[in-house]
Length: 230
Image 1 (spheres, one colour):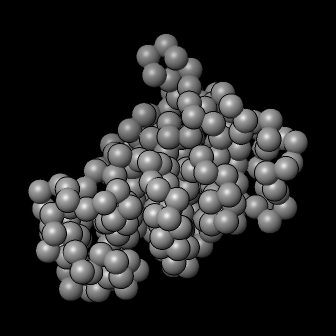
Image 2 (spheres, rainbow, N blue to C red):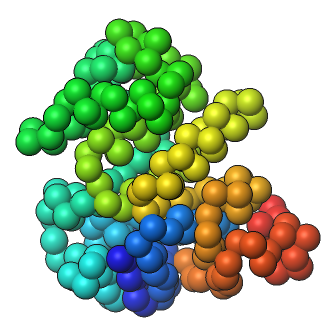
């Protein structure tokens, strides 16, 4: 479904991604792991053409994305749940979902899907998003990505800043989402990433230094410990 091949991305003169290659097959959840500042979020931004690569290729269903505008990429079925969540704080939960629903889609069905996936949101349907807890806002952000009828969801650090008990609720919700939506998940929480993903890529200094099936790896592995330790 997605193929990133030898991507080099810069911020000014800073060479952030230095030949990143990865792939995501339809139906998979793939985790992108690594310490802060190694290029995980930049990889997502490069896929979306928010940070267009200077070199390399990004193909979605065989079609080259490099050179397209971000809104053109989004129309092809790629959704983004950014780390900052970016819900509309002065709109209600229901209004946030309605805004994210494509014009040709059934808003009622979108709301039903939201509340089936995130039952905790239904009782807050008339509450402004800015008054929700961090975990509830994260669920709403994921729901907005889902109702956009995206075939591939790019999810950036969904556990960031959340209390442990709230993280588990987000994990449960993402696991449910993963049953029907392909995901590329950026996550620094190693156990969470391994729990949710089928495969992983480990980044360090803008390069993929390891990859494999999540069932074959544990935090005790010397390689993982080396690259994830502070």
